[in-house]
Amino acid sequence: MKTYMNRIDREHHLMILIIWDYLGSWLEKTNCLTKDERKRIKTATTHLLRASDSIVGRLEQDYARKIIKDAKNIEIRIYDRLNASLKHTEGGRYIDVEDLYDLASYSLRECRGCRGKKHKECERYQLFMKLNIPVAQEQTDGCPYEN
Image 1 (cartoon, rainbow, N blue to C red):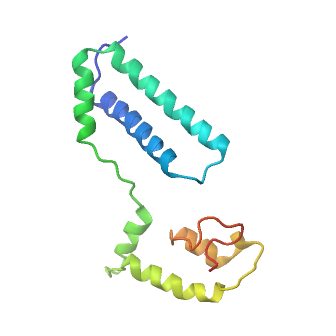
Image 2: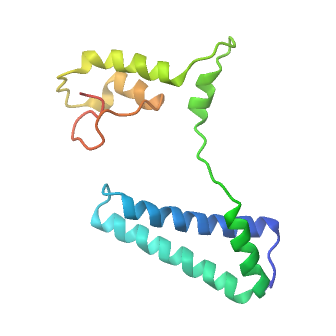
Image 3: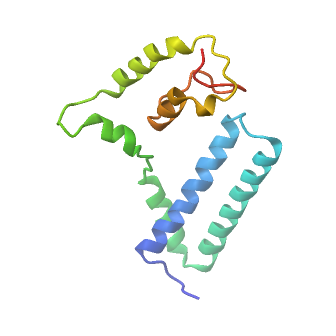
């Protein structure tokens, strides 16, 4: 078994720690999970931490210091390719995402009082989901865009 980590292996180890930290923080803040889902995510975080502890335990002591130092300098971002592509169209025109959201808001006026039972088949719903338009209601049995 190797007693050192190359750069790529260290990056993967860092990702384990980042995911562990992210999931733990999310579990503290969220109330959208069922008891079973919460339990499974908690189990996943436990396994991630145990794997990390095992890695650190079998390597030299300076590796633990190195990984802690690296973790302080790491930033992870979720990059939304769709919204990034909306900023610049093929014609070179700039589209402000906030303007797109305003247009969606005007379009939603027709949805007021909608009682469609199959909202996932609605063309407006499908388009808004495709464009990552924020929903009006997070927790609802019907269309999340209906206001």
